[in-house]
Structure formats: structure tokens, C-alpha cells
Amino acid sequence: MLWQHDIGFSSGLLTVLFAFYIVGLTGSLLVCSVVSDRLGRKSVLLPALARSATRCV
Image 1: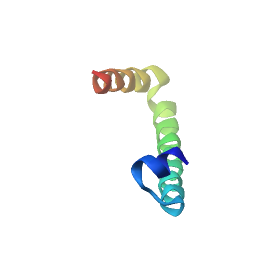
Image 2: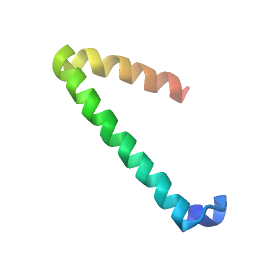
Image 3: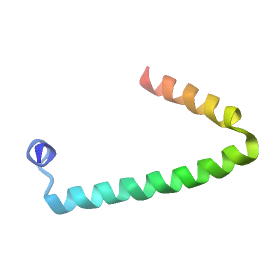
Image 4: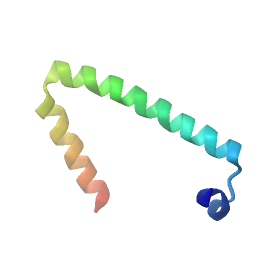
């Protein structure tokens, strides 16, 4: 409700945006889980943490 008022999105558009978010999140979790199973958890986690840290700066 707050986003609808502040940004001016309709409720239908917000529903579509959140649906795309869930689809993207599910896809990335499925891909990353397979990659981490093959390469190891540490070799996937460290670059992801480094990328997240640089994006925050």
C-alpha cells in the first residue's frame, strides 16, 4: 500500500513485479545450489560475499 502511494504503481503492477521477483529468486536459488554442490560451498560463497560487499560500497 505504501509503495502504491509513493511510487504511483497500481496493485496489478505490484503483483506482477513481485511475481517476477519470486521467479527470479527461485531460478537463482536452483542454479546456485547446483553450482555450489559441484564446486563446493566456500568457492561459491566467498565471491558472492565479495560482490555483495562491493555493491554496498
